[in-house]
Image (cartoon, rainbow over all chains, first blue to last red; front, side, top):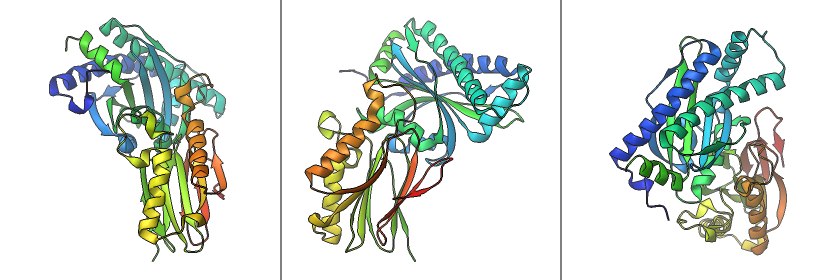
Length: 205
Length: 162
């Protein structure tokens, strides 16, 4: 039985989790910046408790079409990591990546899909690497899985995982964006309840 | 003036003709419609998990296939005084949103939701008239008790009526 009850999360725990998100997302944003050779801005991460039925409010409602890249985490920290963007941002990001690698714009769906998947891989990899170092815990990410669909349908996947133990989910969410190019997206870290325990214990709480 | 009653995730509600009832963006969740074609009334549940008995924290009945169906029947009895023997069902959803392969049990939740839904409908002797389940895409569904039609909309696919 995990002793951390995230329904009773206090401010110190919240601050620590936000700092965890900050370190992870900072590295992820840097990786993304390098990939597109341009500056990526990022908001201060928030660790927040959300009713599972409202999970798609993160991105503006259940029927908003989004690109979701999901990576499952195993090892000493378990859970899911998601990288979510709306349709326009996805298209824009693909253009920026292709351009920075001197590739010509393409309509080839397979190439576009693998571009966005690979960016998800690099971004999540940076996030998780930073996390793994900070916590000195082994984290084994899966390959990236891609889905372009309604936000509610995509986010039902983590919502269901949380639904097994609670009516709420605690997520560590970071919004990032790129000036002028209209790319906006989210990194979302969703550790399991047991992993929250480990993270907080490791960091002395 | 007809209204469209919205059902959220882990939620259920009922409606009568000419109103319609709708739920957005079913992923691995299953949308369960129970309807009584003579009274032209219907109920819809948007369930997330197969079985309430395997979960500790389970005060929301609409979250599970077993308690969701039971609670939907009871709500329809209370509200419309339906005869349970006349109920029919249509279901949609239960997709696998990410192509994980099959070895991971937790990620096969869509299939398990579908199985549990069918098992519980059978337990209540409610015939399943039609279904649009599985695959790997999300579904927004609207049911019209007036015609017993279930309209299914998905991203980048033609809409369907079952």
